[in-house]
Image (cartoon, rainbow, N blue to C red; front, side, top):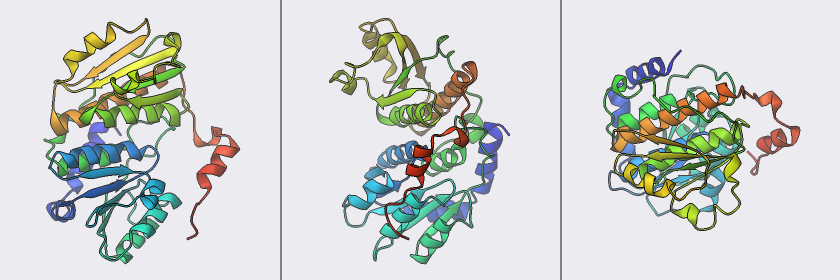
Length: 306
């Protein structure tokens, strides 16, 4: 199943009444809670929500439980499985009188759905994408991308979710990736860096090109670093002036022609396609069975009792 098929399947499942209910819920300040690879999607959702003139925050479950938010903030929980204890803990924390909650999941029978509905909230169930082949699979977030884009004004999916064209990855496997993007380009940079780390491809960090000049570049070894720019059209002209001061290092620019919602999602897709190409070039396809036992133990560790 390819990305276009997944996008079309999701779009056809988003009947009008579902979108009306979700848009009504989103009419106010919004905290989007997610974890792992889905956190970059939460950041994208927050950036898109801000374009409507309403504040938004992208939070991990732990940050959400420990951070006071303005009265009236709605809570949107994003979870592929709806089963991880961090997200379930965030749902229990959100179930306070006066708090409006909505969850987006791929499994309508997941315990997250029961928790949200028991608290008077609502759930949007998306069609499940195909099972990921490995930890580097770039397409697992496509349904949530389609939903976010549809809510905030994305055009027809057949015009956006086309096979992404991207430059070739480096010929030498990098030891470190620095993904840079600001504004609506920052979620794509975050997603790219997360995929590099989560898959075991290499260490990676995300930021914007101005902020990293305040000390973040000091420990970087240019000979093993891959710098990946993510930019919308209005930001692209500034990249050349930035790059002319860099030492010799592998550098890739991912720039899209579109702006706004379409541009933000197009960069996500370009980054996913570039990452898949890099993983295939260097034959790096780890699975959860290759994770060390101490990482598995920390992943399963619950900080709150059910």
